[in-house]
Length: 254
Length: 206
Image (cartoon, rainbow over all chains, first blue to last red; front, side):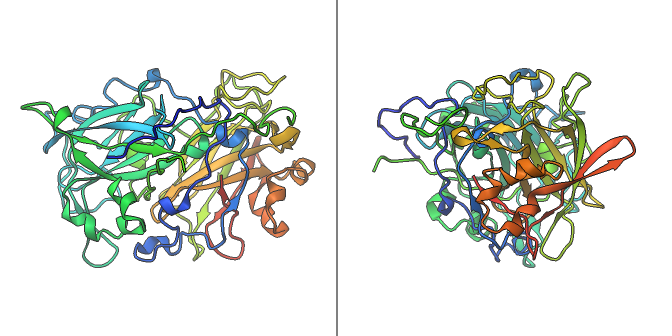
């Protein structure tokens, strides 16, 4: 489990700039082991631009935009009963790189059902659809940056890459923080899944510690006895810099 | 050195991104309130425009499973965000400036219905030409791609834009400029994005 820095944190200004992205934390665009990336990866270097208002602002979400069951995947598509599978709570904290909570972040999740089948017209896998499971949800983080949702543990499934590639069980996450530069999309895996070691999509990440940080840990402290197991998954978004001596992002130069 | 946490590693959106971010496109209805590509209401101030395009891979084939989000200022050039303190620009309560669209499963065409943004303050007193910020995710894209769209009827503003001018290769700047066309009574800007190839779109590290 990672620990936040212990230094005294300056409050970030609302229009403070964000730390430069550390590209070594991420998979390279071209990762031939994941075949689809070959034709979908830019060949030119990204052009680095100093941040402006366009990059440090982002849409602000509010609770009234979300429905009461949006964070409960066990109930939000149930038609005639409960979905089949392992009842699971997923929770954690969204923080920035300086350890500050990211409040009011939109956390959107989607996943396959317990059979490894997605409710999607393009998914042709043999695994059965579950009439009571949709597979998507969304929540906002609270004042501590904490989020929680409830779901059914997804199953692993085969996919077309090499002839016998299987995805480990995973939940997709899309997170919108307080600045456009914090926008992040990723996948959460489950502790102990043997398919993690061979998954070509996970292996696009060159850094083992970064892979480990995507693996949620069984969290007995948040488990509901006789009901649901819980897994803990923390997310780190880009950090906002201190702004004591700063170029002006708006108005005149200082 | 003061320790910093590392940003969580990105992973591809995968082919079923619609389930989570646009369930209606995956063919099912779940949320009461979907986030979509129509960004205006009758009360929104500004010139109505449609933005339409496709995203092409390195073989010239349109992606049929791409998801794009845009983030833009209102007609006066102000962002709907508490950090925007530009003077003399009013907020528009009827415009959030954020939208999300998926490409069509057959044609690969995506579109947004929005308004043309005003110019936004740049760094150190400069002015940025009207532009949209785009975030592009899909199967095969490991880290969401950031780019910008500018308007071809803003030639003078584009020529002075501090971000366009940071692109060393002048020929590549035009990959970020959308073409205006009149379609009946509607104004449409065509903006095609090329992930690879001779006219690869400029993508930004922001």
